[in-house]
Amino acid sequence: MAEATPPPEASGPPPPLAAYRRKRDFPRTPEPAGDSPAVLADGPRRFVVQRHRARRLHYDLRFEIGGVLVSWAVPKGPTLDPAVRRMAVHVEDHPIEYLDFEGVIPAGQYGGGDVIVWDLGTWEPHGTDDPAAAVAAGELHADVTGYKLRGRLVLVRRGGEHQPGGDREQWLLLHKRDGYAVEGWDPEDHPLSVLSGRTNEQVKADPKRMWRADLPAARASVPTRPPPPGQRAGQRVVVAGPTDDELAELDALGAAGSWDVFGRRLRLTNLDKVLFPARPGEEPITKRELVRYAARIAPTVLPYLTGRALNMLRYPNGAEAAGFWHRHLPAHAPDWITRWHRPDATSDGTSTYLVVDAPAALVWAANFGALEWHAWTSPTSAPHEPSYALVDLDPGTATSWDDLLTLARLHRTALDHLQVRAAPKITGRRGIQIWIPVPPGTTFDDTRAWVEELSHAISAVVPDLVSWKWAVRERAGHARLDFTQNALNKTLVAPYSPRAAPGAPISAPLDWDELDDPSLRPDAVTLRTAFDRLTTRGDPFRTILTPAPPLPPLT
Image 1 (tube, rainbow, N blue to C red):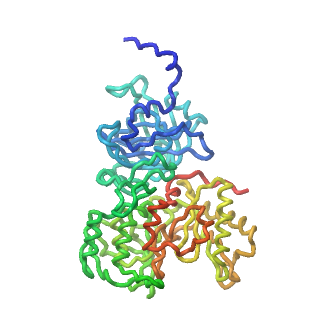
Image 2: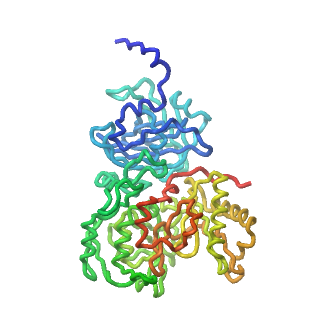
Image 3: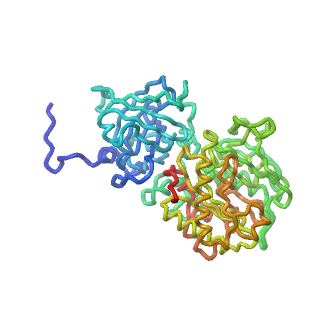
């Protein structure tokens, strides 16, 4: 049957996201509707792979091209094995906001099922400056740098063939035989989300997050668990965590006992031991309160710990006694805890690290006496490639809080001028840190050199506040801008980690405008106030979790 001639008002090419929007009922699906196609920004293009369990399991491979995500459904998933050819079905373009969509599409909606962000990164077209034209011509070569996928992927349209029962083009997907190729590599052996560290099953059982179209994209993914009694609905973020029944079970335990939480049974000990001395006018904090905090904060802090070795700063006898670094995971740790066996470990060095890939693992660490959590800045999958460039504002003995804020504001101005995305946090002690996301493939040499150059430029503005001497006694009390933290196996205290000090201050992420708040103090947020802050401000640090363009030149 001949196709009907469209009316004049329908002639011409449809809008880029018309097919995507036509298939979805946005009041019912948590997927982003998408604004107009984004203008291509400077820096490398991004790509995402989502593991999607709809009627059938498949992987959605999406490349940023022309302000949208040009997409293919790959039933068996992409692979690093150069001997494997995968079928890929070219589907409708998706909005850029889909880059970090993770959750559950309701049954009855198009694509109903659970979705995780299986891989994320940047890519460059190979052999062309016009990837849209390459797609139209039926062959795209893409050099990808993700957390799981690396090297060159090739997509080739199969001439004249279509998916059975539909009109979508069938393509072939393969990986070139290059330095990143791995024989026998199976995507199903790597099931965790690179954003949340969870499996599809865990997302389906408790989605925890939904997309809020009324919020900026960097903060639009928010927890779905309803607020506990006494909290106002409609606040920006509702903190997810253990249920009220699980918390009541913890409260009912004696000094020791087993606690069922996050699907695990944990043996807890010495719950009434004081771990943090009291601040004036407050009560001291016991291990029970630390364990409760670890369980409640785990869904928020997990993205900053997942896939990373954790160095635990342990104080088994409390913060008033001596603490020590505990890096090697003990043999008595539960079998379900994720371990990383460091491949380049020496015979006298740490070889097996704790990796907090599940919320129960953080609870276990708290019960083990880990008062502070210091995660590696590089993932275990690429230990020589940091995820962040780090600016550590280390005050000297003569550095006032106002002086430190001056240094932080200067960094804010410089980063804004450079159009570099970053996030600050107080350390819970005296300092301020600034974390800058970098794309996969960046080295520690890259981040260290860039931060050193930035810091020297800023110190030239206020030379009386900064010393470049290494030894503390030689700094004349001045602050140090410590670029040397950008190195393998260097750790900085994780966002939301307690610090071993009276009142259990927290290393709390900040909004940039808080640097202008006269009431801000480096140890102002504590274990007991952190959740009130989260429910009103949300998590300002979430912006560092999405890939960023390479660090720009400073000259």
